[in-house]
Amino acid sequence: MTHPPFMPTGPGFKSGYVAIVGAPNVGKSTLLNRVLGQKISITSNKPQTTRNRILGVLHRPQAQLVFLDTPGVHKASDPLNVRIVETALSSLEEVDVIVVLIDAARSDAASEGLMVKKIKGGKKPVVLR
Ligand SMILES: Nc1nc2c(ncn2[C@@H]2O[C@H](COP(=O)(O)OP(=O)(O)OP(=O)(O)O)[C@@H](O)[C@H]2O)c(=O)[nH]1
Ligand SMILES: [Mg+2]
Image (cartoon, rainbow, N blue to C red):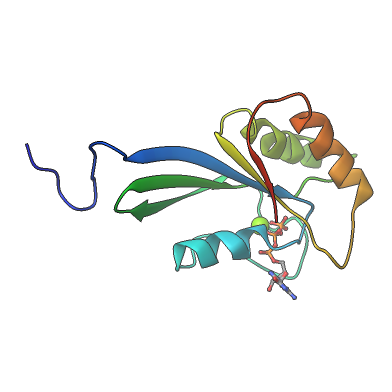
């Protein structure tokens, strides 16, 4: 049976889930849009722009990568933001690879602490970008 070009399978074909996480406003959605070559996730200069998980699928001849753009991880105090941060952190349990995006010019110790706590002890590949 032959497969259409957008759904290739066969030996060597790989697929998997990749979460993009990081502090608010570090450019997670911008990175996803750039990787996909089209604007599917809202970006803005205001933190907490992304409020739930956004899925983007990248098709390659030998691979299919499903990216999860997530809300910014921060120390939330109000119930809405606590819930939003939980959405971001729980995405890490569902993926094969985790991309942690950090703004090299502006560290966010509280956010990094939350992410490390969640990732530590796991066996998933983590890419720091
Ligand atoms: N200088 C610089 N600015 C960037 C870069 N990537 C994104 N930005 C800007 O940073 C701001 C935030 O970008 P977003 O992609 O919305 O950030 P985000 O991490 O998705 O933010 P939240 O969803 O709110 O957590 C926007 O004004 C972008 O234009 C980068 O590599 N360099
Ligand atoms: Mg975003």
